Each structure stands twice: as C-alpha cells, then as structure tokens.
Image: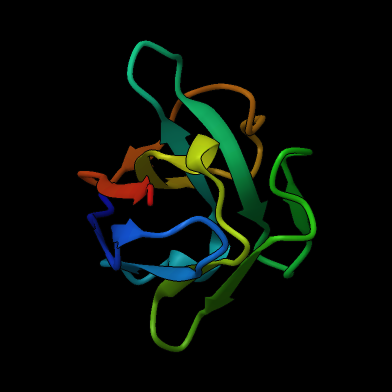
Length: 121
C-alpha cells in the first residue's frame, strides 16, 4: 500500500511558475514509476509527465520544455516544476505511483488526493 500526498498548488498568473511536490509512504518507493496527471473540468485525466525508478523521464507534448519532473528516492518525494504556465494548464494535478510494468497510458496504481493549479490573470 502506498499513500501519496500532494502539495504546492495554487493560483498563478500566465507566464508564472509553480512547484508541486508529492510525498509517498512505503519502503519500496524507489521501485515505482512516478507520474503526474491532471484533469481539467469536463475533460479526462491525462498524463503530464512520468519518471521511472532509473530516472528516465517523459513528458506530454503540451508541457515539454516547460515542466520538469524529478524524484528523490531518499526522501520518497517526486516533484513537478512548472514554468511558463498557461491558462490551459489549469487543472487538478494528481500524483501517481505504479508498478513499472503497467503502461502510463492506463489510469491505474496509487493516487494522491489532487492539488488545484489555476493559471489566470
């Protein structure tokens, strides 16, 4: 069992930055693929970025070059640095932990409660 707790959401102006953090419980954190997903009102939950246990990263095309995912296995945390934010980035952001054999395109694994990110002037 893994428990995930996100923090760091809020309101930011277009072009601004936010940093999200996810703290995970459990002694096997380092084995999981960690990801950030988001869900905007009326839309399906979508993958934003993921990082494997070995540190390989991948990003959605819409955030590539603006967002950076990182993990600290010693602290059981995964972070998402978001720069050059746009109104279309507005969504609830969810932290996810999954068995690395599960494709990141499938909504499975453990989920945090979500944190709201609003990009607006």
